[in-house]
Image 1 (tube, rainbow, N blue to C red):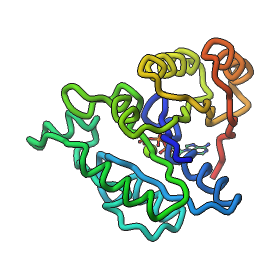
Image 2: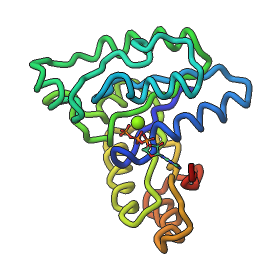
Image 3: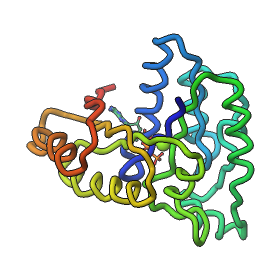
Image 4: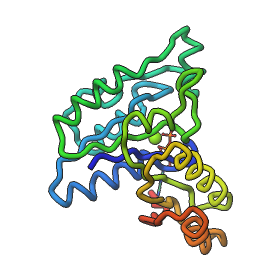
Length: 201
Ligand SMILES: Nc1ncnc2c1ncn2[C@@H]1O[C@H](COP(=O)(O)OP(=O)(O)OP(=O)(O)O)[C@@H](O)[C@H]1O
Ligand SMILES: [Mg+2]
């Protein structure tokens, strides 16, 4: 099964969690590949580069990341700033190739689900076109119930299957950490697949 890893926001840990999920399925003996359809910001330090290195993948970087935009913005404004209009065909072509090379592909989203890719196409529309079930990565902090329920609502509106939520970055220091998982599963009616500690480095 291939999975789309989305999140409640940028910086919530989608890339970090994608690498953990890849390692999890690898330990079951699967050959797991990854994809970051669109990256924005410096190309030498983007998510695709990090995932390729961390997971020691042989796939060429432009297969893992077919669209790279230099401005550190959402794809639509980043492309507009460069007078570009994005089309999805390079993404789905690369995805098809990757599917032939691996048993399983994890596709990392861009920011959250209502990030614009073109003037009338959002990340949620892209997830729908991939036809993949999702995992939502959410923060452990105060505010995460609202962000996660909004994300669930946007996915459900498009009838996109949700496998569950992974809550990332528990510190043991915040009161909200004691209640957020229970609240998200109660109101969002989705399973909490994992709770991940903030790893000190
Ligand atoms: N559980 C964790 N413990 C320690 N560091 C973490 C953890 N989760 C994420 N990080 C760090 O937090 C930062 C943001 O995480 P990450 O890049 O995975 O977020 P993201 O959701 O993929 O962001 P983007 O929207 O830019 O793709 C990174 O430096 C990452 O290494
Ligand atoms: Mg990322």
